[in-house]
Image (cartoon, rainbow, N blue to C red; front, side, top):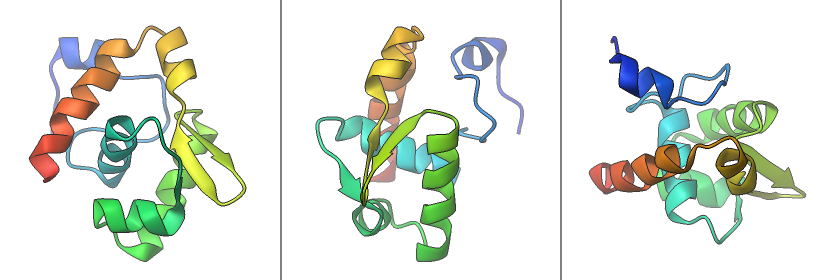
Length: 102
């Protein structure tokens, strides 16, 4: 599914497809709405309704792309890195789009 040029310009430089409707987008939106907390993989799975076998690989790829941070068993959005890269608008879009998943 193609996206428009403005949306393209607001995507971070990541190898993972985080377009709306993907598991990566769902994880990023969930973490953006809850950006003051860190979650276990199971909590992310339960909060996003992503199958258990998919949430781990998605989180790992998001961490590889420096979009989320991982310490011990906890995962959180890499808010500082995204803001430093000028992606505040992207974060706000994720927070708004989370409402569509509810």
